[in-house]
Length: 498
Image (cartoon, rainbow, N blue to C red; front, side):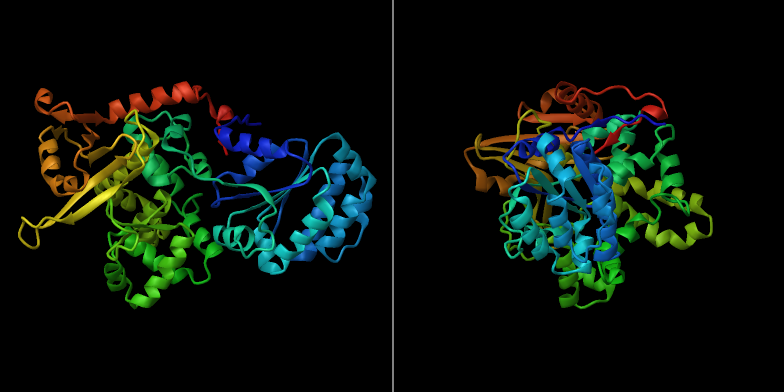
């Protein structure tokens, strides 16, 4: 049997434990997209202190039957399982009055975790009101911690967490579980820094996806075997995600495919999809609410900026809509190797976009040895250039209000070393932006996959050059202090991440 070590999520576990130690009855909400590790986190937190129940879309009757069986087994009293309960309130009423349950509660705070709570809501829209009554009338004075969890972000935020929800104001705390940060990929694979980046650009930080890649295979072998092969574990995952979140996945899929192929403005997306502006805007609003796509405005621009750009938030979805969906007919005909060849030809261009996103995240996390309030991209018109050539872009602009420091950076994912004169171009491009931040500290940086050429001594003390080796050194030196890594052994020692 595989031996799994649960690492990371220390902060989340600490938050749950602190809530557990407070008072008597308490309600806690955990949510996050599918495969991000909610089940593992909750199960590890519960231990032997209660029950974990995974709801299904079968409706109240079947879920009640399954729930009463699980809790009966845990408290060692078959009377709960033998009962016939028509609704959740009568079931919980019987539970809190059960002597075996009360005995357990006298020994420790009893945890009741209901995962995929949105399934219950979809089958019965009164569920939030029912559980508000259960909590207020039955659980609030009991030594019980009730955890409600779900993967449907829209339902959890709209029906459980929102001001309009009957459950609003009852919770002692909430956790939104996000994907793992890039630095944790080193725990999954023995890859060099280049292939760690490529893996992140393909899968992001979703633990379940990372575990699908086999650490004894190369990056390209993993892509072929675990994504681009019919029946592979990640071959149809994107379609499954859309079907579970959206009622009309075809149109959403078309918009995501458009964005994955480089159409980032509303007009470009409309032109690609053939849908009118109002319809596309409506679909985009839904995708943003689910955080499947994210809007982007230039650094320093108002949120009301009209010509915003749209990007797919998740690297796996971005990869899937760029490479898998357009090639499904080829994959279905068992010619996946042809698709791999296409991907190899195009991947470095795709990787250059993803490298910018990775470096923005790393800058925000302190890879420069300091933090910044805002980190984003910038673009704008240069009035000194002729029309058609007047748009300037800067990959990363970050600002610290405390230090009054502006970081201006370029990202270069190329096979050849980058000339240090790139800094000169960066200085010129940033001139009109600097007019808004006079009197502060200005730092320039260039992040390069393949290093640098030229006379480094001539670039100035206000410039930082970092290649992948330097990024790796800084990133994992930080990690070794904060989260000591252990070397991975064979398959039986593979790590499980929350």
